[in-house]
Each structure stands twice: as structure tokens, then as C-alpha cells.
Length: 176
Ligand code: S3P
Image (cartoon, rainbow, N blue to C red; front, side, top):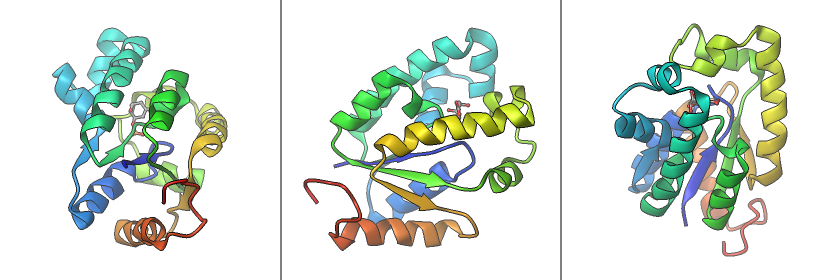
């Protein structure tokens, strides 16, 4: 049963996913990294060369493979906004965990990281609006939301593990 981390860019999906996998001794895949490996170039270069639509197709193709092959998966911020991807994530019957943070904290974390083509091209207002729009989508189909603000990655990992092992109703999983 995979653990799938979703959420807006800058919420710590990659760092937390990697640490969670390490601490649970499970296999880990960062979808963005898999895409870069498969494409043989960085995501910004891929966006510049082929455009977002082609990127989304590659992302979709690799999502299924990653879910089938790995225990813990960190997705890209846009991955769960595509309906085909939502179906693949839901069909995995895993634990879908949304990481969240306030927009100002996200902005501070991302800083001037130009590795994020979506962030690079949007005005401040458009970026805020995108988060709101995407949050509504993430919220609809995640099992649990973890607020990462003012927490370090280890604390977040501890929180996720507590949820996974608690066997309570906090997570919506039929099979937990
Ligand atoms: C994207 C987020 C990125 C990456 C790509 C597109 C998005 O991942 O997949 O740049 O649409 O929000 P992170 O969420 O890890 O930044």
C-alpha cells in the first residue's frame, strides 16, 4: 500500500518523502526526479523545450510506473490536478497525504528557486490563486492534511508515521 505525498510546490514533499522512506526502510521515488532521469534534462529545460503539455504527458506515464514500483512517492505540485492522475492515485488504494503550508511560508521556502517553471512565470497574485485552486483539488481526494508550517522535516515524518501506525479513524483507509 503506497504512501503518496501530494501538495503545492514548496510544502516539502521531496524532503519529507525521502526521510520517511529512510526511516521506514522502504523504497522511495520522487516523481520530478524520475521525470528528469527519463527526459535526460532538468524540468525547467524540459518545460522550455517541449512545453507544459508534453511535460504533463510524461508525468502521467511515469506516475503509474512509480506507484507500481515504489512504497513511498512524492508527486509534483501539479500531478494530482490532472484527472487521469487522480484516477491512478485513487486506484493505488494507498495513503494519500497532503502536505500544506501557508502561502507566505511557501514563498519564503521557494525563495528565488528558478527550478520551478510554474512559479517563475506567475505573478504573486496568480501564484496565490493557483494555490487556492489546487488546494481545493488536493483536499477533495487526500486522506489527511498535514500542516508543515514551523515544523522541521523530522517532526513531519514523525507525525505521518504516527498517523500510519495509529490505526485510528484519522485516516480514511478501509484497509488500515
Ligand atoms: C509543478 C511542480 C514541480 C514540478 C513542475 C510542475 C507544478 O514540483 O513537478 O515544475 O505544476 O506545481 P514541486 O511541487 O516538487 O515543486
